[in-house]
Image: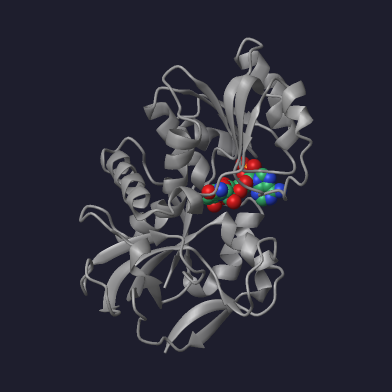
Length: 324
Ligand SMILES: NC(=O)c1ccc[n+]([C@@H]2O[C@H](COP(=O)([O-])OP(=O)(O)OC[C@H]3O[C@@H](n4cnc5c(N)ncnc54)[C@H](OP(=O)(O)O)[C@@H]3O)[C@@H](O)[C@H]2O)c1
């Protein structure tokens, strides 16, 4: 037996329950992990609320770090005792121990702790593909990053600076503006009181930006499009304020032959070789000290409901961990 957070119906954070669950031996291709730190991510709230459908009852969570405790049949490239981390795979990371497909695991370098592993896999791999593949940031680019003081946001601001960009970031408060500025955001905009499109035009001499990284969704989508220069790229990668809904593609022509993409980490990291390349680049930039992880909230795993409530109420900054 082990313990995990599960939910039997969709709804608010209160549907999350701490339960004793049976853990079968790992199946072929799986390993059993003893988890030492679990990542809290906004995407977890989409499964819990029902925005992203999942069969019920369900486990929850997509990121953790821990130690391999047992090997299923056919697993040859991992050993009992290996330190590993993951982002993705089946829901169920909010658990003391679990089985995971071995091909989703990445070995943690000795210099990275379990907490660092759990803090960087999902948000860091996301920052990696968004900045390096979806729109490849070039030195001299000015980029707009929403929720710049959040988990993905703080990583992206720092990494975009490493790539030689000027960073404009939106944030919900003055305290968050200060935090973003301390992590590479050249121009924080408090979008809860200031119109960000007007400010972006002002900061770019009227030209607009080549890319907007928009994780807010419904509330910012249209304004984000209006920040782009002709042929700019709208990267709509999240729905923190709600889903964007239907988009009139003619709008993209009228606003300057814009590109629109709705990317997901799980497509970009689907092939194991891509996952390993992406993780290699992420580990390098973190170990070099150029991108610093900001673990600003820690909760007991049992308190996952409170952690999700804080995340949805915009009370967190940087990354949050759940500790078994
Ligand atoms: N597509 C992908 O591959 C992928 C992968 C990872 C994450 N994501 C997305 O990236 C986003 C960030 O994820 P995260 O885990 O790092 O979370 P986060 O940014 O730490 O938290 C979400 C932030 O969104 C902002 N926000 C604006 N309007 C909001 C609203 N109505 N309700 C709640 N928050 C609102 C808040 O910051 P302010 O107060 O500063 O506005 C809040 O702190 C999420 O949308 C997530 O779904 C996408």
